[in-house]
Amino acid sequence: MTLTMTPSQQLLTPQLEIRGGRQLSGEVRVSGAKNSALVLMAASLLTEDSLRLRNMPALSDIGGMGDILGALGVGIDRGSDWVELKADSLNQASPPYELVNSLRASFFCIGPLLARLGVARVPLPGGCKIGARPVVEHVKGLKALGAQVTIEHGVVSAVVPGRGHRLSGGRIHLDCPSVGATETLMMAAALADGESVIENAAQEPEVVDLAGLIIAMGGKVRGAGTPTITIVGMERLHGADYMVIPDRIEAGTFLLAAAITRSRLRVTPVIPDHLRAVLSKLEEVGCRLEPDGIGMTISADHIRAVDLRTQPFPGFPTDLQAPFMSLLATADGTSVITEAIFENRLQHVGELQRMGAAIRTQGNIAFVEGVPSLSGAPVTGSDLRASAAMVLAGLVAEGTTVVQGLHHLDRGYDNIEGKLNALGASILRSNG
Ligand code: EPZ
Image 1 (cartoon, rainbow, N blue to C red):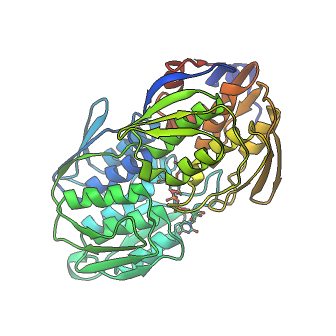
Image 2 (image 1 turned 30 degrees about the vertical axis):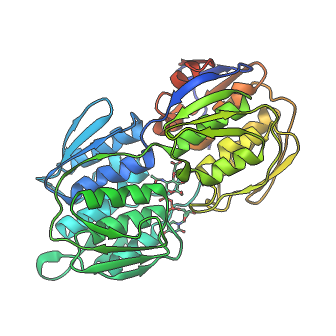
């Protein structure tokens, strides 16, 4: 049954009104990485000392993770781009359901809680629009470290039996290089008794960032960024003062904003090694890239079609598939995009079609025939990155595009319209 909103409720839907057709210019600053900051916040549970994280993005998901940690008894102090966390008096091992239900990343708490307290009860994160989001690998790995894990009534309950309730080092082979499972198991292993090896581990930069934090806290981690990570568990970890890496997905989104508007922009900071597959595709479609050691200048005039397939890092990131499709919808020629990571991450196709894009899908493959221009229309972003894709399409569409679904967008982008307007875009955030 679809609920139709009353006119007044429709009036309360926040939206972005984007007047297309404007070129961008200047320089845009990339915030700290959401998908690193969230897991680094959870790592504060591994020590009773104070953990300070800098270069934190101002995102609703970050606030949500702070609420969840606060509910567990973690002391929190925060500034504009930093947070200080102190888990010296954890009062319970299970974050409240109503908070967890709104934030998948809350599942990051299960590994450190189990390592620290020997017990953890965390509601299943549940699926979302892009896929089922199973946690089979996370659970399998925690069992390999000595935990007894049951799943009942949507709650994952884990306990370490025996004296001291301490996890034991073990060898884990992941069936798929899951980012969340790799990070969960790194945190659990960091306090386990003995050495752990994670094989077929995810190699994402955010995994490497977590390893850097655990080492800064006195932990022993080797091989992060490769398929095999070795962790030697410690009795305890101490606090740290740590800088979060820049958000490679936000950086890629702004590089695509330059490409789709055929503009010249400087995006900073950009770590090229975090975006090799994306930079290669941008050059393949005809963009010119000039790295300068800190940032990257991109310029584009003619955009050609290209084929791309999403893959685990270092392959093309699934999080930039939708934004890249917006670019290819305006390219010269037909592109074939294969979404090979999530089972349902082509929902932005329908919204792009409403803007005049010529796209046909067959399963997880989209055939994108570039059109000379898109036309502004009311559209809705179905998930975080699909919303970003609609904003990019609106920048170049003729007329005005109204993008709804901003609760998704604000989870992953820190003031995207402010940053784009400073570059010359014309975007108004309104309440409908
Ligand atoms: C992380 O999600 C990111 N989120 C996602 O970013 C990102 O898209 C994803 O990694 C892939 O790069 C955070 O870091 C908070 P996975 P995660 O476990 O850890 C399958 C965004 O927009 N799988 O690597 O949940 C799974 O179904 C978000 O910022 C299993 O089959 O991703 C999916 O198809 C979206 N079994 C694939 O692996 C498992 O036990 C990748 O999932 C676990 C995962």
